[in-house]
Amino acid sequence: MLYRKMPKNGDELSILGFGCMRLASKEDSSIDEERATKQVRDAIDRGVNYVDTAWPYHMGASEPFLGRALADGYREKVKIATKLPSWLIEKREDMDKFLNTQLDKLNTDHIDYYLVHALVGDLWDNVEKLGVADFLDKAKADGHIINAGFSFHGASEDFNRIVDAYDWDFCQIQYNLLDEKNQAGKAGLEYATSKGLGVVIMEPLRGGNLVKNVSQAVKDIWDEAPTKRTPVEWALRWVWNHPEVTVVLSGMNEEAHVEENLRIAGEAYPDSLTAEEMQLVKRVENKYRELLKVGCTSCQYCMPCPAGVNIPLCFEHYNNLALVDNPEGERFMYAARLGGAVALGEPEFASLCIQCGECLEKCPQHIDIPTVLEAVVAEMEGSDIEQRAAMAREMFKQV
Image (tube, rainbow, N blue to C red):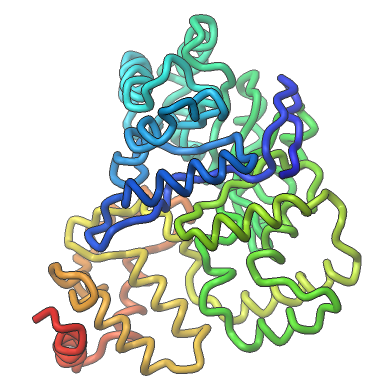
């Protein structure tokens, strides 16, 4: 495991952080606690010392899970990061209430890295007005939090003013080979670093879109490289190639994910990719921009949908349609997974959308979700959707 130093406090942090937003799950979507605990502990045993969770992850189950997973001496081996749900704050007292509840959930007396979560310009303006600076100062003074930071999902023009508004220790931004100019982007990465902040990276694989169902056109470009690497390794090494980056979070929910990410994290030095390799990455970026239909990262912030639409899954299949060579097979899998064949449940099709707009204010990617869902219906459903769903249920024997 390689380590990088958090600028303001000198903490030596593993360049790979364990993200607890997409933990190993059972068929009913609940956390597979036994398996996820083994994965978290294995990663810690092999050098990971930064573990990231948040109030809404796994519909509120991630923090209590992590509190249990870090028993038996594992809490002392790691720095815990969790987040204040900024969108739920209505008054100053709410901040203390959430922090105290999170300390209980995590079974700890302090949070090592505490972030004001998912900031955009308006959310920051609200929590700033309600006294978040006072909250952070007092929580640091009494030892309940050690380092104060924020995670950002807003427009680039708001990032610098948030950095400048408080004496932050670190920040967390979305950054990957498709997001150099999106949200904080490369300019934000460099600005935060210039102000002495450590930078934690989320979504290095863009919710898996850079590594799942890789199209042949993208594979052909990767295959040109003299040094052969998987798409996962290319994507992670590209982020770690930036010396400004302190930690990269990865949502590891398969044992193979843990194994591969740990291997890469032992080799990914800053500025280690050659100029030729960087040009190859740029070509892959351009190809993805040609192929992807919607910039969803499957973060689940838009869920649950009041109408029952599984928005991230709809968008996953919509993007897959552009990446796979078998569009009819992808439409069948859409009908199977959204129609209750793979896991028992009510239909979750895009066509259930009632255009209520509740999802719009929740999406960190600022996707016009209702409009895109209309496109999903046009591309993925059609008049035979119920017939395909019934066929899938029969195939999966869940009728």
